[in-house]
Amino acid sequence: MFSHKPVLRGVHAVLRPFRQEDIPSLWAMLHEPECIRFTGSRGEYTRESVDAWYSNRGEVSERLDLAIADVATDACLGEVVLNNLSEVNRSCGFRICLAGPHAFGRGLGTEATRLILRHAFETVGLHRVELEVYDFNPRARHVYEKAGFVLEGVRRQSLFWEGAWHDTLIMAVLAHEWAVHRGTPGG
Image 1 (spheres, helix red, strand yellow):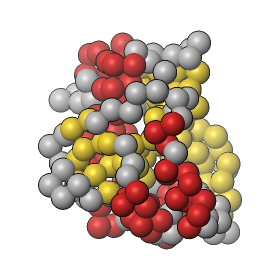
Image 2 (cartoon, rainbow, N blue to C red; image 1 turned 120 degrees about the vertical axis):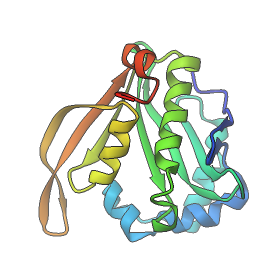
Image 3 (spheres, rainbow, N blue to C red; image 1 turned 180 degrees about the horizontal axis):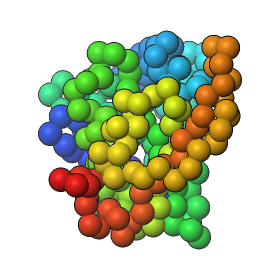
């Protein structure tokens, strides 16, 4: 379902397949403290494993991993992913990670989210896209709500991070909702 790796262009961001020259930025992203916290990542990454992972994303058909690149410079500023595909249910998961504070507050996350959702619903023909976000990331939740995600539930105290328990919020957007608002509910 995700065999084709598109290039999706916006005003500020372009979503495109990864390139070898993106690896240093992605390596830095995986070690950025704020990115680690917002994703709840505990993995240990080697340079070789990161290189291998991003080098083969174009060959994987059950998920879509794209770089978020600055439209003016083509610099890689993060990634956007459709994963956990269920073809029978026409649904998948969504995640996004910007490379760090230098990429925050520029509208890149909102635009990248809308671009990938448009592709998921209007090109791929999915029915549902869902995500998880931690309760200590209100900035991300705001972006998701702006793109049309709706809070569906809470997994209470599902993450133990820095000595405290945190909730995981479950959000989703459905094809018929997207057809009405196209990523701009209420506007």
